[in-house]
Image (cartoon, rainbow, N blue to C red):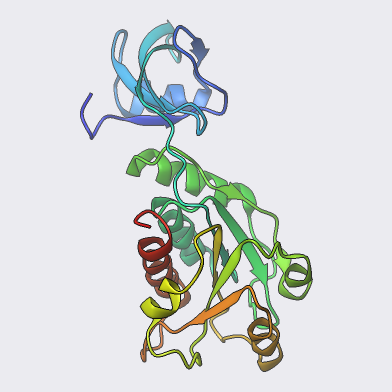
Length: 243
């Protein structure tokens, strides 16, 4: 099957020979949107066992079954990178979740700061956006969507083995590349603050921690979603897929 083959995320472990009842949403997508029929094929992935070729078996006018045929790709772990962010308006949060998934993060973690303007986040919507992004861009895992946490409660319990890369507009480091290259290899998290920036007390708290590395993204002021793409790409290139 080609690179543009249709892909579906299945929330159960897959194995050759399995015959699955397609969910109503998947059946509608395959039969009515894509106009697939008996014997057509689709790619399935479960986030654990890789990517599988499956054949469509019609069960009724509006339902179908999926027969798992053979494995096309083994599971890929991807970078052990978490994305921590202060939620913003819905459309831009959707965009950040989509791009973080495409960039291979393992977990997406909403973070409430003193200047966070959004009081609630829709975790189901975030999960749906992450699944759709994974299906469309070819990655083999869907990031974990975590419950929102307050910054002041998160940091004292943070595992010191996972370094936090903190994007700070006031960071006094000359080069983010040099700062990241000096970090030890291991689990990492990228932290993007709220659009109004961190309060001074929050910045002081972050900078006082030995497992936090501040970096600058340059002299230009970026929106939160732009900063997320820039930071995740930079960290992934130096500490993730290529190191």
